[in-house]
Every structure is written in structure tokens, then in C-alpha cells.
Length: 208
Image (tube, rainbow, N blue to C red; front, side, top):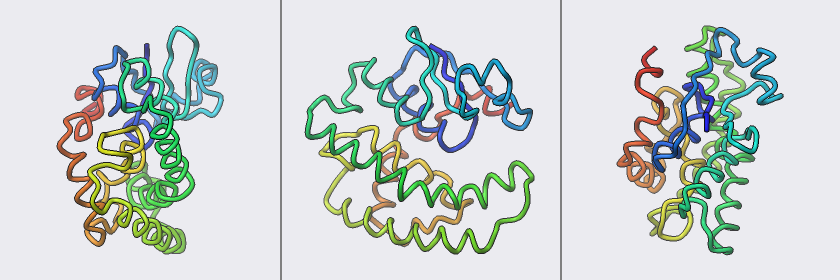
């Protein structure tokens, strides 16, 4: 299997899960600044021209959440729960995250991190203000849910944790107010104990 990635938010999920599981993947870095994601060869793998993409015997799979679930299932891991009720609950958080939490933490990440790293302008104050309002709204929901819990779904780590927390390693640079939500901060500190969460990208490529 080949996992095409860049050192950005969504590929971080797939890379972290692959490394956590020890999945037999070859990491292939896509240089976004050189436009490697817009080549005809890459478009054949993902017509959306985005990362990540997982190429496997059955073809190519895009969308980071789907890739996480595929890798967990391939490894026989409960990161993608086998139990029906827990699987539905994990799916609920994956959907909530895409529609709400990372939708807006990702906007702060884009305005403060991506724009700076790619040299594409200053943060848009209106966009930042709007995103921050939603981040606070949904962080309160997440904080309440995490009270008395180690992870989002049951007592064990799942792909939902990898998805919902994905912007939090960038909290300082993205100006995500993590310290205002102690349960979220506690939960993320537990994820920080995982080597694959701290260092999801191949070291040589990440330094290149």
C-alpha cells in the first residue's frame, strides 16, 4: 500500500493511524507548493486533487476518515469498532467533527498556519472571528461530553479521537483556545502520550 500525504491537517489523521497501527504502507510525500497534487497522474488517484490518498490492491481510496477506517479494519484493530453500537457512535463523532468541530478549528488552522506557511496572505479577521465563535460553541459540547471519559467512544481509543482532535496539536499557532476547555485539554494530553500522534509524518520527509 502507498499512502500519499503532505504535512497538513487531514493527512495527519491517516499518517498517525498508519504509524500507530504499524500498517505496511509506503509513505509518499506530495509537495503541495510544487503543485504535485494537480498532475494528471495524481488526478487519476484522486480527482479532488487533495491529500491523503491510499493506494491498495483494490484501487485508490481518498478521504482521511475512510482511510483511517480502512487501515484499522485491515489491521483487525478496534480503532474502528467491530461492535455495532460503538461503530455507530464512532461514526456519529466522525460526522460531527467534519460538520462542526474541525470544520472551524480547521478554518483557524488555515488562517493562521497555512497562510503563513504557504505565503498566501494575512489572516482574514472576519473569517477568524466567525470561526472562533463556532469553535467555542462546539468545544463546549466536546468538553461536556468528555467529563468522566478517557476517550470519545467507550473506554478505548478509536478513529473518532484521531479525527476530532486533529487540529489540537496546532492549537498555539492556530490560536485555538484549548486552555479554556480543561476536559478537551486533558483528553488531548492523553493523545499526546502516543508516539504516532506526536510524530505522525515520516521524519526524513517531514524535515525535507
